[in-house]
Amino acid sequence: MDNCKPCGGAIPLCMVGEFDLPLDIIDRRVTKMKMISPSNVAVDIGKTLKPHEYIGMVRREVLDAYLRERASENGAKVINGLFLKMDIPTRGNENIKTPYVLHYTEYDGKKGGTGEKKTLEVDAVIGADGANSRVAKSIDAGDYEYAIAFQERIKIPNDKMVYYEDLAEMYVGDDVSPDFYGWVFPKCDHVAVGTGTVTHKGDIKKFQAATRNRARDKILGGKIIRVEAHPIPEHPRPRRVLGRVALVGDAAGYVTKCSGEGIYFAAKSGRMCAEAIVEGSENGKKMVDESDLRKYLEKWDKTYWPTYKVLDVLQKVFYRSNPAREAFVEMCADEYVQKMTFDSYLYKKVAPGNPLEDLKLAVNTIGSLVRASALRREMEKLSV
Image (tube, rainbow, N blue to C red; front, side, top):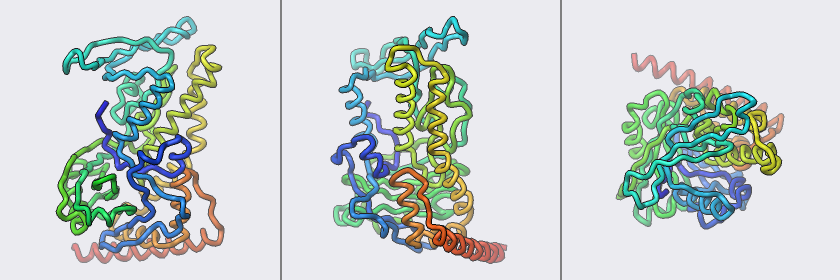
């Protein structure tokens, strides 16, 4: 259980309160961000944040260990094991209470590295086993398009770490990713430098080198202390519930386009699913069925579908070319855009806008895109 999920580690402010997270597991409170365009124009973001507002930066090995230990203290049985497969009861009224049988290898330190094969009978299964979910495969949940995220943790000199004390950077451009962004996120005593892509997975190390190069002056003298990579789902799986099995988090495909955020949505979907089981079983008095788990899906889709749709549109519009990315960074300089963005991110709700400001924003966005389109045409002429 000392494994750590490769992850940028940014969490919204609302997660700290909703999930009662202690402040000492948060490495950094980011109150400033720099969005850096393909031509290295940097826009400072964060001017609209209130004094108590911040983006939390965590290390997954710390956050996950805390949540796991808290679950154990509240009665969960924690098993250090590898899930292999499960036996699913035949559908039908006669099997409505037949248990699912999980097959797994348990590692207790007594059997060396081979572990011990075991089985476990359960009433319901919540698959929270990530992008490569074996639970999803067991219920034939279908595939999804995915990105590859690559990240290096870099220990940089103390004087350079001061720069990143409460600041994160995001780089956009064809050099760092054709369809995503590169990042430098501060941790306790190091920075996480990474990037991702859906369309050019084979070039991920080239994009990572470019991200490092864009930040080179600020991380000069740094030493790479950890290299990590992981798939990131790009959209929900075709099937997320079957019988008494439900998927949550990355296993379900709950990562947002544009930002690549998944920690909050993993925690929130897990809680929603658990609440649906508690409610459907009347606190354990009766067996749940598929209709109970589908209430979780209905609530999830109703609450978060607008967020996913908005970010999907943003990615398609602004990540398609360097001129469009220049327009995106230019738009981020607007304080109204910053306020709307942070309000939506920090509190996980699509923030209601001011009609007049929305109109001005629409005009400015169209202007930026027109300039981007003209610039792209001129660049195409030069390349010919």
